[in-house]
Amino acid sequence: MHDAGWTLIALEWEREVESSSAPEPEQLPAASEEIPFGLRIGSDCRHLEDDPLEMQTLRFLAEMIVQDISFTSMAEALNVREYRTRDGRPWNAAAVFKLTPRLIDVAPRILSGAEWDSRKKTADPRHLELLALRRRSQRS
Image 1 (spheres, one colour):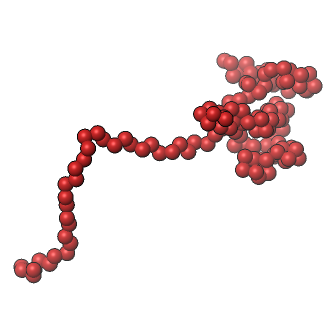
Image 2 (image 1 turned 135 degrees about the vertical axis):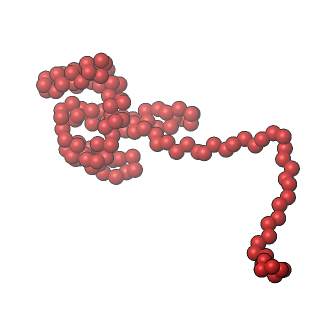
Image 3 (image 1 turned 45 degrees about the horizontal axis):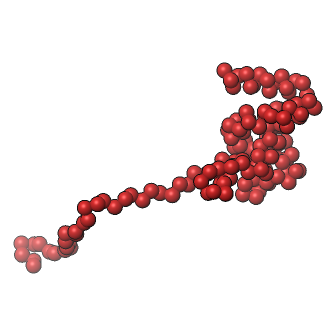
């Protein structure tokens, strides 16, 4: 084996494998997308439905945003009401801030309807003007 300075280092074996004519279906990776705040998996396990407690949290946040309250104060108000994040922790300003895009998505649905109309009657008129301007800008 040591002819002309050669030494066997590795040996590799191959064999042909018979394969069926139908290719195996690819396995798709499991979806790992997070369910948006305010929604949960429906009872049929195929659709999303409103989560009442999370929607209540979003409504409360929408009211505070209209009143121009800081994220820190919003977090404190949520904690006073004993609302918790989805993972059970107390709210902080960063967690409230992270909900802002979701709140923008659901605001037209939250800030309309009879419940909101009744709350507008007790709100500060300056905040209502601001809300009206924001709605007009969203429609444009």
